[in-house]
Amino acid sequence: MEYMEWFSTRLTELRLEKGVSARDMSLSLGQSESYINKIENRRTMPSMAGFFYICEYLGIEPADFFNSESRSPKKALEILNEFEKLSPVQAEHILSVIKDLVAK
Image (tube, helix red, strand yellow):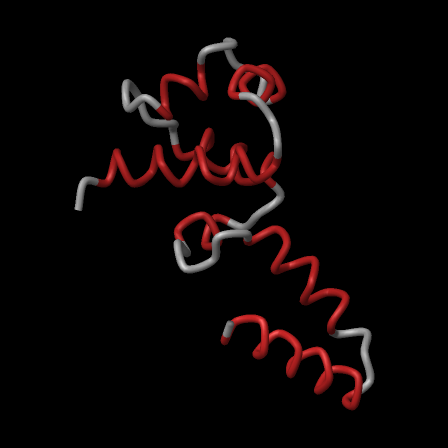
């Protein structure tokens, strides 16, 4: 596996999901305007601290960044938080709907 390529692709996916430009994300992280662009174009990698700041900015846990099975980790967390407020009967209905959607 080409880790630098995978990392840059995953960062791009998550940034686009958030709906922010690479420039805006870079500046929001207190970096130069080309910081994220350089990572996404495989010219550099963030430091460990930089990686944690990226995850914080994206609103995800570091483990979620590496879980490529989850295409939308922030939405999954939001859904889980709301799901936990449901009664068992409501939760079963929602689970049935989700399973039906996934099957299609």
